Amino acid sequence: MSRIRITGGQWRSRLVAVADARGLRPTPDRVRETLFNWLGQDLTGQTCLDLFAGSGVLGFEAASRGAGKVTLVEQDQNAFATLRQNAQLLGAERLELIQADALKFAQVAASSAADSQAAEKRRDRYNLIFLDPPYHQGWLMRIEAYLSQLAAPGARLYVEAEHAVASLGPWASVRAGRAGQVFYQLLERP
Image (cartoon, rainbow, N blue to C red):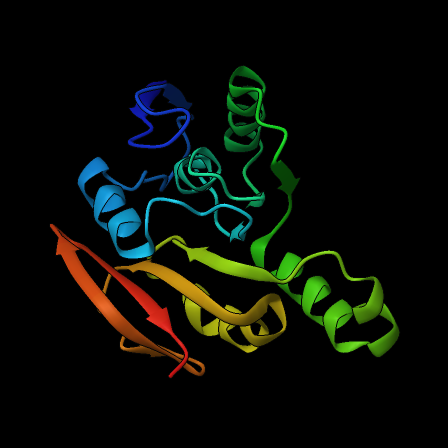
């Protein structure tokens, strides 16, 4: 098991464990620092969704910077157990951990948001959605249809992929970078 450092906020320099799970690639320090410079370091009161949590480092970084609530969704049992352990070590009450398939989570959350009565009861629409799915499996195309129901007005998307992403649904890339074989971009609605 390896470790990765949180780069800013309340838990700056704290190390979190990273599970040995197939295909897991934690976002590098330099990329996270760039992302949170784009977003602004203070996420106070924002709700965030890390839909393919993996190591959870993007969600932990958001919570460390004051996000009001961060939901981390991870299917892999080993990775999820490590997320839970890290959350307990950090004493992170603002984190909601959900062990589920990302697509099924998005479908259920989106259908709840589309139902007018359920929409009144719906707890979460997210200001910031992190999308860092496994590569070469078409996850972004499959999840795209549900993003509008998951997103709060003015929501931004952060996407990491094996290729540049110019747009995703009504969101368009406003900032982009590349680190090795990883393309990363911040998307906003025009």
